[in-house]
Length: 340
Image (cartoon, rainbow, N blue to C red; front, side):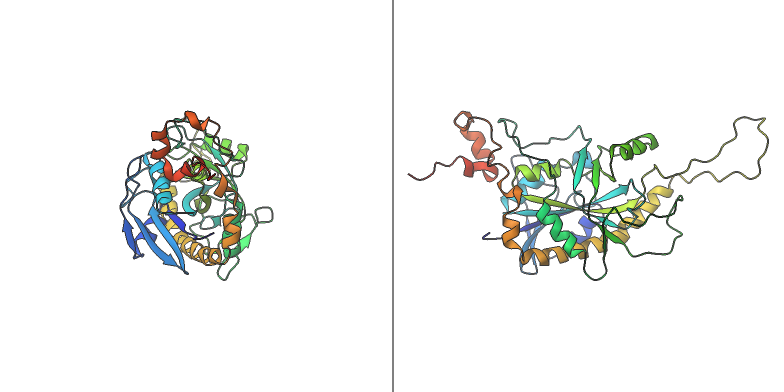
């Protein structure tokens, strides 16, 4: 690999933290799909060029459905991005994934339905997507998580937390970096109903979020290796216990009834845990970039780097040349006539 260039996509909390504390060259770009969420800041970490993009834009004004993900990924590709480490806040669907922990997901279930999810609308392009997150980049993040200040652990032997409504009153515990997780991506912007949250658990989901898709799929179409650092903020709503209420006016008194749950409790917990997890995630990403600098050959051989090699099923001679040029950064190399 001639040059490793890593894109860092910051989600809730982390996008602002990265952008506000980073100095570098600001790139204001246009793409065939419009403008990205924000200017992309180019700087250097550990001798590696990095491109920092805030997914929700300045001031977090872009909700998940309205994020122009195609423009974000295309703009990173235009700037020579080869690998993406993204971040995003998630709810936990499992006891062992505790608030303020970090998770490096390995699978995804896509429930979004309002978002443009491909660059290739005028050709038949079918990327292989069995492993939605780059295994090489994931391993780099996991190895980075084994350093000082991190407690790397697998989900199979993670210690379960005692049941309850909230962890706010619990003493602070070391956070873990979990080595796997199935991320359910919902449309949002409202959070799940309790019935939906329980259904996601039955599906095998471990985490619930709103931004990993179609971001991961579009990165694969752009031949950019992609991995995600998920910041656990809460236990979603499956774990909450509804208040007890009398069955009627003549119901006998059973003593003091439990207080009605505060409807804002979950949101307060999420915001507090986002702030706490953000610095953990920034540190993990910085360590991962340092390791990436030492693993250029392995990263160059990651599967996503050749994702379009056999994925263009259309007869290339029948694809409009104007469309080939419009999307040139993504696929023009597969249309060039080899030298005779």
